[in-house]
Image (tube, rainbow, N blue to C red; front, top):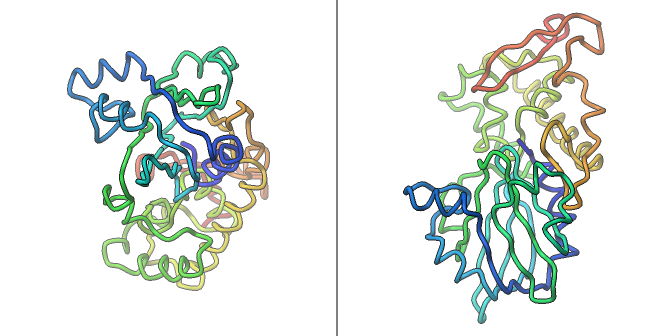
Amino acid sequence: MPELPEVEGVVRELSPVSIGRTISEVQVSDVIRRSKGLGKEAIVKGKTLEEFIDELATMKIVDITRRSKYIYFHLEKEGQLYLLVSHLGMSGAWFVVDELEDVVEQKFRKHIHVVLKMEDGGLLIYSDIRRFGELRLLQREEDYLPLLRMAPEPFDTDAEEHFIDMAALPKYGRKPIKEVIMDGHVISGCGNIYATEALFRRKIHPGRATERVSEKRKRELFREIVDVLQESIVAGGSSISDYRNINGEAGTMQTRLKMYGKKLCGKCGTDTKSMKIAGRTSVYCPQCQR
């Protein structure tokens, strides 16, 4: 699943080629139409397809920003501001192309679900292989309350204290520290990949109960998370499976990972072990991480 660095990379790539352009037409796939017909919500959430298509058409993209793992398309239509919120799920990707055939990889071209035709020509395309992503057209952020419950950005000045305060709550005390740092209410944007790396760097066992991690080590861990997220942003993110930027290019952070997906510890050579935490496979070194 794309985490904060991957989403940040998409935003940085999308912004210069999308801001200022106007959407002339919206097309959605037959898969989405069938899903809506069955009373389900595949990708397009919170609105009927007719509402989504009609309202989004003729909107101008005035800005693109990131909040945690979400992409915010700030839109304007007839003097009214709107927000198209995009979550990439497990395998979502945006492409800016002239024609559908310009999406090079077949696995993405085969799973194009939303096409935004631009007034000045060209396409802004959302592809999603597993269809766990979502698009929500809102008038404001407050219209979807889960967005307001996210932790501060990890780079914000108040984020570390927020983490310390949240981790001290009784409901988190007995949970594994890895589960807690992957909780978006506690730290924004840190998922399985970067939680694994930060815990390894700070030599903390992912299954250790949060209440058994001292405040000093929690602060060290938080700062490590910030460092590894920033490092990944510079490297263009981690292309573990289906992450691509808008040009279909992979990131390079996966070549720098020291523990995620590894069979041997890069520090001591010990065979790594794994365990399930919050439904995710957690790899760790039994020798280095206590």
